[in-house]
Length: 153
Length: 153
DNA sequence: TATTGTTATACTCTATAACTATA
DNA sequence: TATAGTTATAGAGTATAACAATA
Image (cartoon, each protein chain N blue to C red):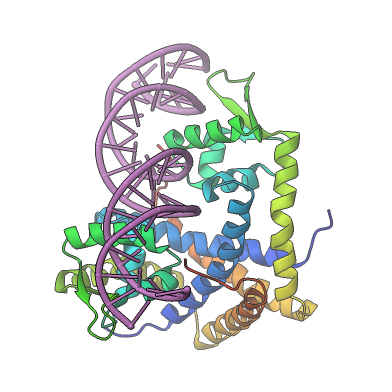
């Protein structure tokens, strides 16, 4: 099998992401959450809340699974369900005050870690990194759109 | 809370990785494997095999969990356990012929997807992307080394 | 005594599909 | 009829800790 040029780029990308995830998961567990639970907390952070449907689309968690995860977060007092007035089939999930608090506490170690990693980055370094990542993301989204009709049923 | 410059870079990185993972997981399920199972297959691919210890370190899966995952892959006929002659506490895991075959088949859709995304990339584009990612990875690894002593107990 | 891998337990996530209530 | 979310079920991953065999 021929070595394609882009495989190296993908490996690098995966390795970078891995480093962040390692830090994240460690701190998430330390606060008594599972990674999927934190995924929900992080998605709801700094928002007024959103429906199960929207939450499922953003996190790529299917609705049946989502019910269970939100149940556990509600038991912990981190989120609340509210009925949606416009469409009474729909439920709005949002962070409680304690949920907002944990959200901030969980991000702090991340931010600390990132700060260390980026200490020597100049404005130009950031611009160069973001430029390449944004370009990659655009091409990936285009390729994805051509492949997956993407449902959440 | 002040918006730190690097948070935008991290978000971009996560979004790019997400796109790859989405494709990966879809194809992995299609072949009847779970993502952790594929993680093992991918790690063993193109190697002569390795011990549980090494496999656990590379995939970040703890040893108790690893036993179960390897059990299921062995039932499917994709990997085999072999005793290690040098250290009889140790077990070597390696892909069977069928495992190698599935490994290749699973990477094919990935490669196809990536090829689409990178169609318009020139040699210079690749060089620029790799340069930024490699630099990021180096800084991340340094930051990680200063934080986690990193055990797999 | 330390290390490698297995076993045991309890809980969470996951896919899938049937179900209720709205629209 | 379609959609939003829940419930039910069976399987898989996970952390954790105790254990056996070997070093």
